[in-house]
Each structure stands twice: as structure tokens, then as C-alpha cells.
Length: 374
Ligand code: SF4
Image 1: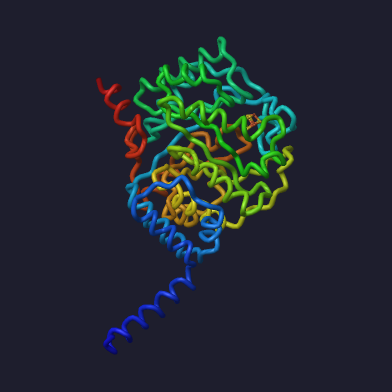
Image 2: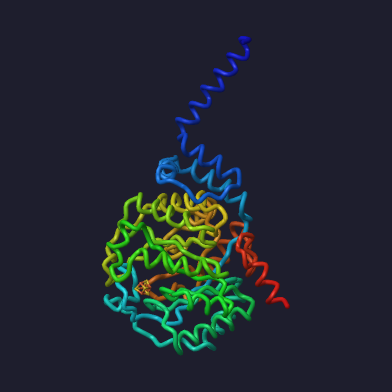
């Protein structure tokens, strides 16, 4: 071998060793797989741990690169939550203001009227919101008058030309089919955390109950929205395992909400310390890397982040948010940025709002947009 070739290859080898030492071999290999635009369902905990151990700015850089391969980085999807049935829930989710087991100051209301839902949805549409999420504090759906009224709300809001998502608790096969027949675009049911940590947060239903509902939704043409909450006292590995669970669903949930715990007075998690902002950014970046096609939704608790921290999350791959005219999420216990605050943040960042049914990666987007235009 000629000397020049030998010297050249030894320099290259030293350079390679430095790169590997710097960011970790597993992470490099994982990224190469992502860069080939392959969607994987077989991520391992070791691979996610290597991502977690990567220097933050390197991780954000790689996540931003993947984000740009799959999504328009200047586009933000904005949703509005409407609590159509607030409070009085029999479940014991330790973070929730609506559980009847805790004194949180949230009263139990009757099911909201359809006209009121439509008025809120129309104002949201005028503010650039593309998706309305109807939430009911139920353990699960029970067929009858209330469910029929929710199905009617789904049809009416869809007719406004908006995506509709419902979060109504557990579903069986027939209920999922009824929601699909009403034209529901998305169903939300969060796994919340890892299977191991789950029972320290919720005891009134199991992790496998959750997965069963996700499977029922996956058997329909509805898109799936599922994510979790960070900052509940879980270990880093619990967060990574939650992402492993979500990224093993085929196809991946089209929407993956990452909520930061809102410490609601009266709940068992009221005194949880804040998670460092860097852990929030890491979680967003890793979610983006392992589920490249999904919308990664920076959800509850976003108000606790500065505009600069939110911008870092958007750079790392968050492309979906909730915004609110009332400055709270489902209840006053969980505050939210207002439409005006979000419009000024997105405009300062040069971002535009994604139109309804315009997701590049949701199977029903084109079909539903055509139906509505007809
Ligand atoms: S999170 Fe949902 S199921 Fe759990 S207590 Fe709150 S409303 Fe009920």
C-alpha cells in the first residue's frame, strides 16, 4: 500500500474514533437508519439510552435534521381542547384535577350542549386552530344518550371543516366503529408512562387496558393520538420505555403528545418538583428520532416553558401544540398559553399554521379533505 493511502486511512480512522467517542457508536448507527427514511418499530432500550446520553445540542441537531426530512419545519399544527364533560371521574389518575377522589376545586358538570361546542369550535377555527379535541372525564364510553350526543358533536364540528379528536376513556370495538362512522379523525388515549411505573400513578385500570383501547382504534380508519406525561417522579428509563411502547405500535401513532406534569393542588402529585427544561427538550428530540413521521405534540405544561425553551422544543421536532382562548387546557387547574400569545410566538419564529387535514403522514387526511370539499 502506498504511504499516502496509509496516512490517509490512519487520519480517517482517528477521525472516526473521535466521532464515536464523542456521540456514541449506537447513536450513530441508529441515526444512519433514521436518515435512510426508514420507520422502525424495533428500537431497543439501549439505543434510546444512547440517545439520552448524547450531548444535548448534538441530539437536538440530529432530531432537527430528521424533523426536516419528514415534515415542513416552518409549520405548526394547533389544536383546541374542549371539555364536554368535566369532573366527577371515578378513576384515580394521580395527576388529574377531574378525579372525584381528590379535592381539586373542579366541579362535576353535565355534558355540554352541542351549540356551545360549535361556537367554541368556530372561534377556534377563526384563530387558525385546525383540530378540536373533545374530552369527557369518563372511565370509558357507555353507549346511550350521552355518547349519541358526542357522536353528533363529532359530525357537526367535522362539518365546519376541522379535524376532530375525542378523548373519552376506554373504548370497545363497537364504540370505536361508531366513532369512525361519525367521521372522527383521531382518538386520543395516552399510555401515560412506562408499564412498570404505571401502577404507581393509576390503580383503577391496567396498562393492558390502555393498550387494548389503542388496538381498537388501530383497527379503524381513525388516526391514533397517544403519548404521556413526564415529571411524575418516574425514572429516565420509564420515559424511554414509554417511547419504546409507542414506537412499537404499527403504524406509529400519528400524534404523540408529551405533557409536562401540571402539579394540581389536591392531587397526590401536587408537590412533584419541576423537571429541568433540558429533560423536556431531550424527550421531544428522542420522540422525534424514534417516530419520525408522527406529529410530536408539546402539550400540557407548555406554559411553564419560556418562549426560547419552546423554540428549542420546536427545533428538536415538536410540531403540534394546544392553544386556548380561555388560557386553560381542560380545566382551570391546568393553564395554557392563549391564542394571542401563541400567534405572536409563532409569528416571531416565522412559523405558519397547518391547515386541517393537511398532514403529510395521516392516512385519512387527503380522503377527508376531499369529502369535505365535495
Ligand atoms: S385522566 Fe381521565 S380517566 Fe384519569 S381521572 Fe382524569 S378524567 Fe378520569
